[in-house]
Structures are given as structure tokens and as C-alpha cells.
Length: 451
Ligand SMILES: CC(C)=CCC/C(C)=C/CC/C(C)=C/COP(=O)(O)OP(=O)(O)O
Ligand SMILES: [Zn+2]
Image 1 (cartoon, rainbow, N blue to C red):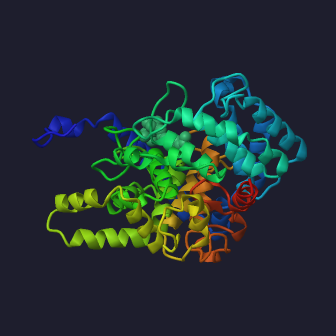
Image 2 (tube, rainbow, N blue to C red):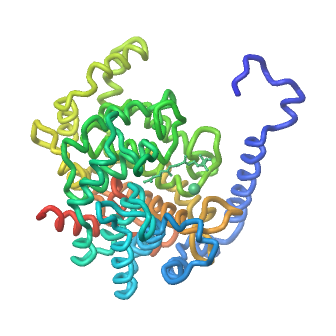
Image 3 (cartoon, rainbow, N blue to C red):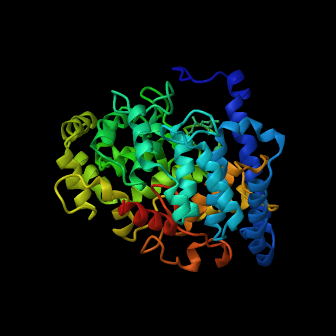
């Protein structure tokens, strides 16, 4: 809590719980880095190796059998499918036909007769599990998986989740937050069912979630957080309204969440965690793609003497779709004068231009490989924590973003010097807006474009 007077000696000598926790994590992480620095180069390269076979073994096992402790995830079963299958795809491994068939059949049983996917058969449809199920089916690819999605019913479910304030509810009577906006817009975009009705006022809702720190909160008045920041920014890009956010402040907030442990934290004064390699690293990677808009916003800002003048100007510019379209056009994404939101996800990767990563990519790779990787397979939040499927998915997604962060094209092979460890560490590239492997995104886009 902020206090106007300096801490007393007694206060200074008794750290807060958060300070203590931070010191413990720092000391764990630095011990690992010191050990790494003290060993010979051949042992270092072994430590930096992506343990592909071990990861695949751990992940595949999760598709066949999970212990009873996983019963707490009973309403998250499509998430387990996504975390595991996306991780396997990132590692460039194929899913065998039997698992593929079983997964498509299982997700079909999670599909609600009135649209959307539930956390398990017979449960209530939910936007988060809908996103997880759709991304899993895209990752599996092929006509059976893609055609199993009932797009008409899904569109109906999304319209029922749409709220008067522009946001979406996660489920009937559920939370209305930035996650719901992203999951709805991401799914609608990739399935080619995004329209003006779904987009209406989403930008206003997300704009109201950007906080004084610059990051985005789950809902208005809450604290900026990496997970919601990725969701809010990706949704704004997909609807062609990213320029309405204060992007320089967003960038400033996000890049400063990468700390001396080399990984990212989710919010100010919290602990480093491997999953933010994707949520924060992904937000910064998206901002890297928007750099020309940011430059322009900064140039505009510098014309004004006070920061409130800048905000007033942003207010007056906000909300006009022609303004949004003009900025997207400036990025070389869209030549038309009406918002071409149907093609933004596609243009985002096609209009790729090389530029420097805006976060410390090598440092993040170091954290993921040395601190988040379990040498027996799977990845984790931080040293001392157990591996799990969620962290495996988002650490590997973040690692892939790092490896391609200098690339001239989204999938052109990076130079060996930007891939930490042996070049065999190279993962598959992802589409940063949807977090699916790029090749799978392309197949899905082609499939749904024709419908
Ligand atoms: C697509 C989709 C559904 C995205 C979800 C995004 C996401 C990860 C949101 C974060 C939720 C949240 C408040 C975590 C804080 O947990 P904590 O307090 O345990 O962690 P912290 O200390 O790191 O903040
Ligand atoms: Zn985490």
C-alpha cells in the first residue's frame, strides 16, 4: 500500500510476503543461471536442449490417461485437448489417427445442440471451452475435424452471449470480460462468421478496460494483467480498432513486465511465470507488428504539451471506423475504406515485415529452457513448481514466438544465432493472434473461406 512517509527501520527489516516470495524466486533462478555459467560448453548445450522426446512422451500420456487429481479440470476438458495437442503440433509431431478420431468425437459430444462447446459432454456451453475446442480442431486439421464445427449454431450462441455494453458473457449469466471478447472474436474470425453485430461496441468495452498503467484489465476498474492484455489487444486488432488503444503506454507496460529473472510477470510486483512468455510476449509480438501505428501515436503525442492533451486527442479520434481503417491501411493491411475485418487475421501474417523484437527474446528463451523446462518432459511456471499441460502449452508457444521474432516472413527459418540452444530446438511458427500453428491456420482459413 502506498504511504506518504518512508518506512520505519522495523518495517524495512521485516519484508512483506511479496518481497520474501520475490527474493526466494530470484535466488532459485540465479542459482540456475550461475550453475549454467559454471559448466563447460558441451554441458551448457545439453541444458539448453528442448527435450522433444520427453515432452512428447509426457504430452501423449496426458491424451491417454489422467489421474484422479485431474477431476478438478472436469469442466475444462477441451482445454486439456488444446494445451496438449497444440504443444505436440508446436514440437512438429503428428497425432496418430486413433487419437485424432477420438478427439474429434469427444469434442463433438461437448458441442451443444444450440451452439458452442461445453467443458464436457452435457455441460453448459462456454466461450473459453469453445475457443479451446475450435483451436484443437484447427490444429488437428482435415475435413472431418473442421466440418464437425456447427458454425450456424455457434454464431447463434455468440449472439446470445453478446451484451448491451459491447462485451460478451463467458456463458449464460457468466463473467463479462476481455477474455470473453477475445475468445468470441478469435473464433468468429477464424471460422469466417465475424460480422458487424458481433463486433458492435466491442472496441468501447475493451477500451474501458485499459488502465492507468497502460495494460488491459479483465473488466473496467480492475488491475492490468498479461492474460487480459493479450486478449484485449488481439481482439482489438481482429476488429480493426487497435489504434484506439493507447499503444505507446501499452507497449511500455508490457515490456517492463520482463524482469531480471529473464521471464515475464503477469502484473506489476508479481512473480515471474513461464505462461506469460506467451501472454505478455505475445502482446509485445503483436505490438511489434503495429509499430508504425505506435510511432504515429507517439509523434502525435509529442505535439502536445501535457499527457491529458494527448488523451483528449485520442478521445476525439476514437470510434471512427474510417480512422481505424486508415491506420490499418497505413500498416499495409487493408486497401479498402470500409473495415475489412474478415481479412485482418490473414493480412496480419501476410503483410509481415521484419523488425527487431521489442522484448529481450534471448533472455526469455533462456528462462523458458533453463527455468521452465522439466528435463523429464513438460514445462512449468517457475523452478520448484510441477510441470503441467497449461504451462507446457504457453511456454512452448512463447518459445516459438521468440525464435521467429526476427524473421523476415512469419514462417521463414530464423538464423541459428537467434535460436537459443541447438538449432534442433526450432519449433513450428504460430499465428500470433489465434495461437495455432501457422500451417494449420492456413488450412482452416482456406476451408472456412469457401463456406
Ligand atoms: C484465452 C483465454 C481464456 C485467456 C485467459 C487469459 C489469462 C491467463 C488470464 C489471467 C487470469 C488471471 C487473473 C490470473 C491471475 O492469476 P494469479 O493471481 O494466480 O497470477 P499472477 O500472480 O501471475 O497475477
Ligand atoms: Zn502461469
